[in-house]
Length: 219
Ligand code: AMP
Image (cartoon, rainbow, N blue to C red; front, side, top):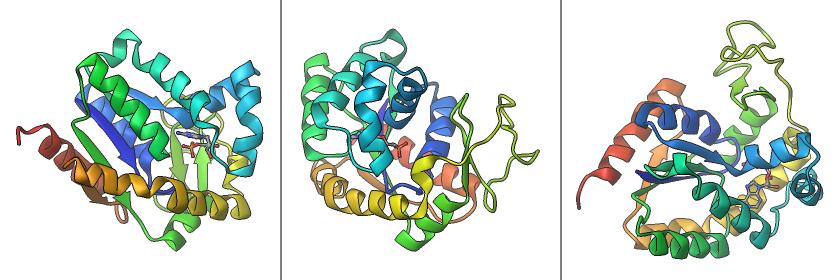
């Protein structure tokens, strides 16, 4: 299965991407995580992305597309993948569509996580991320078992620099401006499945699982 997750920052895509990839045995590809790993390792790619990420702006399409297409050609992505954070512009969406058409494996579903802006802002201000395994937690809605410690790998949880309030608000604006137009594109393709992202995190997962199954079913 080949699945894209859409939705503004704070919609819970990262959390759900991990769960869905585990549940369906798919490769998890998060562009934000790949950029953060490159930043941590001070690679050329990381240095190129840094200014954009710090400002809450999008990294240019050519850079992101090259990186994602390389990742998609790795063997673990062959049976299928969950894409978290890509595509984020129409240009990225078209590049993905062309590459998948060439490889003979088009998308099966696009899950769009819906959440009001003010709820997304509130969530991001309370979000903590594990720098080792990239899992995310929230002080209110999804706290770790031990405060400040990742349940899965024991890493020390951090607040992301780009989760500061002004940057969060800017990232949400960028989503509305650059990424929301993709909803129409995928709706026209018959791929779009809205998933209510507010509420209990397990309930959101179950709604997303149902949307994935609907996407996988023959039309
Ligand atoms: P995320 O973890 O998905 O919120 O991504 C963090 C940051 O990485 C974004 O604010 C962008 O600067 C950059 N980024 C991640 N994915 C993309 C993408 N598909 N296109 C452009 N920039 C991206």
